[in-house]
Every structure is written in structure tokens, then in C-alpha cells.
Length: 98
Image (cartoon, rainbow, N blue to C red; front, side):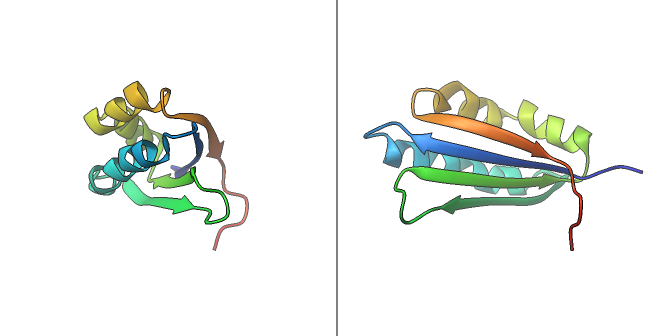
């Protein structure tokens, strides 16, 4: 049995870099959603915390998640995000999901 792979990325823009970060992460949405193993790719913000972005990803399995990380659009993100934000990624395992 294969397990879905859930990743949540939490990004906090460096001061003055909010617009650049938003553009960078918005650029991931279309290509990521088009990947064959992608089940969900959503971008969230908290209106009370400008510059905070949360990326919510779900893939059919570990191979699909690895393919995403190897993709040109993700590699572009990785090459640029460090100059724009502090980030944290959580790899999650389902316990009780409806």
C-alpha cells in the first residue's frame, strides 16, 4: 500500500521582500498542480501577518513528491527562496483524515 505524502511549507518574508516572495511562490502553483502525482497544491496567507505564506502540498506517493522536488520550477524556487524568506517544511503522516 502506498501512502500519500503531505508537506506544509511555512515561509516568512524578510522585511521588504514580501512581494518578491509572493511572486516566487505563486509561480509554483500552476506547474505543481500539473504534475501527474499532485493531488493538492494550495497557497495560504494570514491577513494579520503580512509576509507569511503557507504552502499546502499533497502527492500520491513518495515518488511523486520526489519528482516535484526535482522539477525545474521547484529548483528555481529553491535557488531563490533563501534570499527572500525564512522557511520551515513539515513532512506529515496521516493519522485521521476525512
